[in-house]
Length: 573
Image 1 (cartoon, helix red, strand yellow):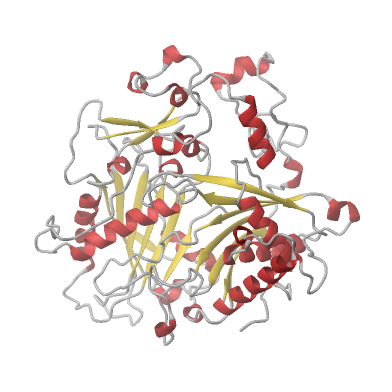
Image 2: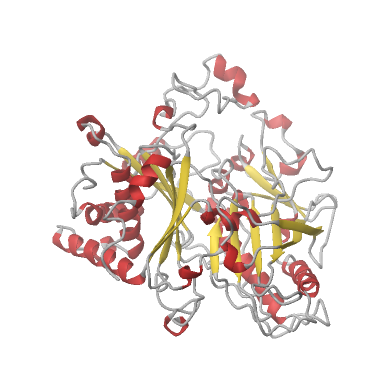
């Protein structure tokens, strides 16, 4: 492992902008409005992941990393033939005056020309392209990944600072956001996708011996969630395996690859009512509020506890005059409860590995609780994901040490990011961010966080399921009473194999925000040591067959209590 608090030394060797191998450019290009759900991710963090691939000891020293990286560059260009939007720009409607809209939006439906809606523009001469960075590192794969984590049959905890070691390999590129498309330190337009491939050093210290590599990608969230990003990387990896190094752009004619579907209108077409009308239908709003009430917080209303010294309040210029004149409706949202989130408190991160047996035990216990309840319909059956989420949330609430009666009876919230491809019957290869945040509320006492051996997490799993089945979009928050969960379960992150004998990734990590209450749930890695025979291959078995990894960021004091919680890891080995 690297010395404590040390970061891997990384040297960038090349930086290129990559474009589709077969591009048809025009002055206007293609302009496609993104969906309403894509627009809700405009201010979220980037979609960002890091893949660690172990060395192939059989690669001859004559096969250099330069050859490999050049092959990756060529296969990336071919991949972009089917994903041209990754080479373009993402833009936003920033005015309320329809007469001031860019001419390129003239053909958009009325709902797509409203303030805050986004669109993609690509296949033009000023496309920024995808930034591809190649680099080398003095670190070995054993420096940045705990070797004892190879065994998925044992529980593990990976704490600061080593759990951040893979994030150091993310590209330093400024990825364009719709409201900040340029990085003024460099003349070109920022890309919407940046990728870095870093060659690792040989664990044996032998020059030119393969040391494995790290691939990191970060993308503008409105263009993709993690499922879409993994599909693109998998498409690229498949082409890399099958394209000849000697005939750089030849793709075998019998190679079948899934066709990506970049058609955001498929999602908007499923909206209830006529979304092109100037006002929503009240009956539809009431029905949505009955299913799951919105948190209509006003991000621009500072309130008495707003942390102005950290987050200056910026009302969009298009709204400022109307806002200060009181012409905007004020009953649609109060100020954010900033008092529950101390932005100055130190935050710690830990990655928790739950074994397959522990996951099964959590699921078994939650299922037994549901069987004893009144609702017997199969649709309400708790899933393994429900059980894991409920357990983690319950232990997080317990770690937050709500000691007074008032605190224990006050509401706590969990916001689960839920993908909608399946529930809305979208194509499996749908590109975009069809996600919503599902609100789940409870009370510390109700969660059973203070009674040793209580059924709190089993009870929680049941209403986690209920909330998932009635999902609506929601604005979330972080801090002591809030937990925001994003899940990469079944996203395909471990199905990627670039060939050259490296196999599938040893580990995949998310470059996600380090903030109090942020949780990432993902499947355990498929690669390992002597237990490989018992591990699942991509697309087979359950997503929990290799265990589950949960990344948790909490206030430092709460994290210490969490890691010392005797109920954190179930007693199943």
